[in-house]
Length: 357
Image (cartoon, rainbow, N blue to C red; front, side, top):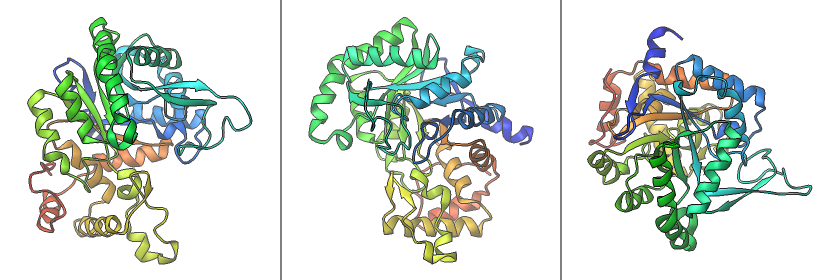
């Protein structure tokens, strides 16, 4: 890619009120853990190298991704680089316990070939501290820039939510505060796909940022109602994950018209099969993108970054070529008329800020 797009990818915004800055585009490393299909260490390293060459300096992983596989891959690819030259984010909230037996590496939870561990939820003080220390060893670093509480929320935990929230409220937040105060972590927050969890956390504890997956995208802008204004008011930054809503905004639905025999079962939305209403809405968005000469993935990746509360957009990739395609999509020029057309069609919230041409 040319210097222009590289500079755009490397544009930086500050995380909350901290001095920590992140690049406009970040690499989300769930895919490197083998989400839906296995990824070799060589392919993972090539993906991270491609992101680095493009100017990306934010890398987000988690113990849960591939049951620690992603953290091992990310650490191996980054640990020889100058530590101050990149921002490393990981998560806590699950402890990974060894599993033995013939089924230890069987596919589960969407991971194609996980390492032989099983996740156990633990948001207590000791649980957060243990998770953090385990991550340091897997990553091969002495400090982590951003530590996020992973997958806390009522939709995730159902009737167990009150129990886990009490663990976090009474102990986990204290652990985050201690880690941030000691300098072992520079910023803390949540990594979730539930807006309400972020709002509830901000009422109890001073977070710096939150990774919000799939809830502020071309398909969904309900975060404009309460969450994003509150983040702006408090100086809390959003790392926008899931810009493709699990894949449907990356692939689009045009192929259903071109090859109807292929069906829509492969279209992913929120980690499951896309409902018919979502498929129809994506088709409408895609048609307007086509009319303006804009690729759907470009519009999907660029849209969230227009909001002042969004510090970075995280794109997932499981190969160097996939990352390069996403980086080119993010860097593409988009005419202002596209956003006007989407608003006029009722497909984009009129309050949503949009990128300039």
